[in-house]
Image (cartoon, rainbow, N blue to C red; front, side, top):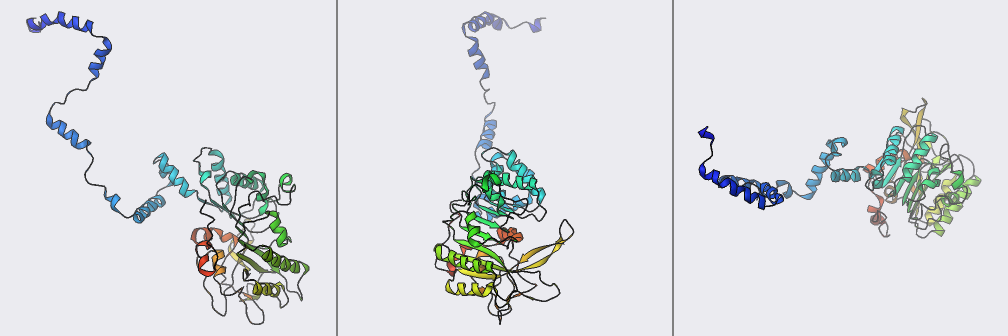
Amino acid sequence: MNAHRPHPFLQSMVPLNNRLRSAIPSAQVEQTRALPLPRKTRARAARRAALAAPSSRPSPLLAIPTEIGLEIMELALVATPATTLAVVSKKFNALVCKIFYRTVILDHPSRIVLFHRTVRSATSPESPRTHVRTLAVTSRWHYTTETRTMLDEIVGACPALRVLALPRPGILASPLISGIQLVDITLQKFDAETPFEWDPQFAQAVDDPASALCQKLTHLRICEPSPVWHSPLATLEFFGTLENLTHLALARRVYLRSEMTPNDAVFVREIRSILGSRPALQMLVVSVFPARWPDPTRAACSLCSAHCICRALSRVAEADSRLVILFAGWNTLVEQSEYGFPDFITTAPPAVNHGPWRPAGSMSFWENWRISDKRVVPMTAGWEPEILPDAVRWTYLTTPNEIFNGHNFWEHWSKFVQHPVDERFETI
């Protein structure tokens, strides 16, 4: 028992301790208990200071050139699944979205469905739909009314969209997308093929239903001729006044007849009118297509007769160098459509069998035709242009290749003509 009895001196200090505790407020006592304990040794304090101090040596990654750093980041982005990149951090996820969604190509119905779900479910200011600048719809499958509705909502949900490629122009007449401002439009054909009819309540109310979204349009390209006749001026009327238009591409089908058809005469007259009334237009491309499918057993097939529209267009091109005439054609695709029949796509331009020629390579549609030294490409003796099997494909369905691999026209424009460089994407 004596071993547990406190020392007499400590026992005499108990009353003093009780008086002191009663005089100090309890809050101050708790604060005193919360104070950190003193360091036990100088050695431990030195070790802690060494760990807390920043390293005197900079990271070796900071010394590499910026270009190499970007290459490393790009390799990491390509080799890492998107699901992994998305969970790195919120800021990094936002950066990845800006890169991934800048250009969107919907080449299959399943991609249309998935992207429609993405733009409809994301409502935050940093959602993927706010980053889309270029959208190309190039699916080769059959479109349905449901697909058309999804495309309307996709285009309308991308406020920053500037470059748009579509199979048909009907979507441009939808009230859902009247709020966007486009600078570049590429269409496969200009017609109202089902399910891309005009919106009755919107398109039929005015003559130019797409004028609201085409006020800043500079590039308009229609790749293939339509089964339904639309004159050049009637086609342009759909898009409004097009005061900023600098590049225009149209398509025309020719017929093996002894003389031009009435529609051919209208086409040539309106082409001349467009060139005369639009001094700001820097380039007008007319792609001439044969009226029939080529015989696959022949090495080449004649495009037109000696009295077709080509000769009249050639005279216009001689008077105005802004007009470029291309001879296009059709060729079979190796894969089969969903209905069991082979899909046919256009192939242009034909390989030239004489004279100087620069290979198309990965140049853009506009650049390729501007650098050609011929206003009519190509022409053989006796006015017998030919479609060759090894034609370079510049078609609507190859739009993704142009977007990913092609050089932009405006980067090379000043090399070939004395015009100001197109800066349309400086504000995007």
